[in-house]
Length: 123
Image 1 (cartoon, helix red, strand yellow):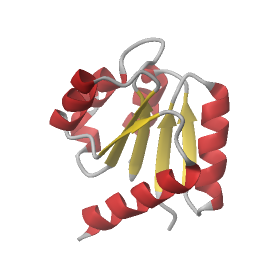
Image 2 (cartoon, one colour):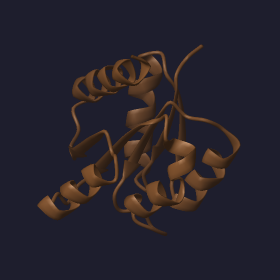
Image 3 (tube, helix red, strand yellow):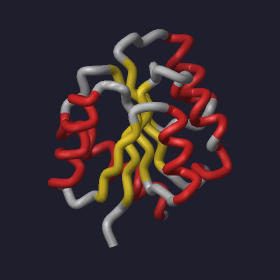
Image 4 (cartoon, one colour):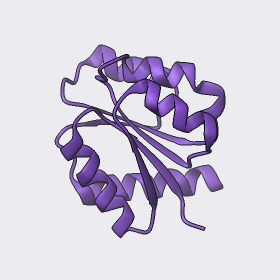
């Protein structure tokens, strides 16, 4: 069975690009443009990987991950931001985010990181 990925970003071009890359690599990708849409999807289904933008229209990506913590304890969590800061990076890692990425994200780098983290979770 293919691994399920939820991509959460308010930028439609990012959603399109990431979902295309992940689908080509054999993942089942679903998208959400807001934190609330992501919460709705996460409440109905389990995802192996969650890729979250820090800045969402209705909440921060960190808030989303806190709200859905119990549902995501076995998921690989990646946070992406266009506005990196040491504070945010530290906060993300303290929250248990597996990978903290700065936009623009290279597709091959994204796939390698996701596969590495999934392998680590499965050990």
